[in-house]
Length: 110
Image (cartoon, rainbow, N blue to C red; front, side, top):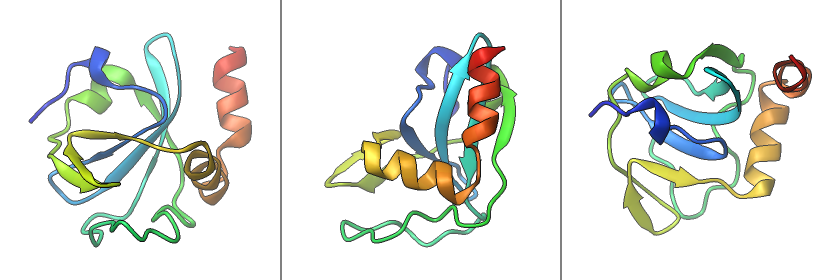
């Protein structure tokens, strides 16, 4: 299933059909920064201890490009949906894991 660019939101986790988790970290205008996991990632469970973005480089792209990937419904935190809200702690952890803090600041300042 493809998303509409207006359906992509900061602070949400998505799963592509290639089993790659994507966490949207920042958006401004038509651009965004997100953290991708490796493809073929094991499903996240209710007992997630660590998010799967360690040492993965963040990506910057147009929101419409991000939305064009094929996404799927997945279970996370007790619900099934195409996108799942990340907690502030999870978002902070993901940002640190992919070293995106300065890129996010630059995007939001630009």
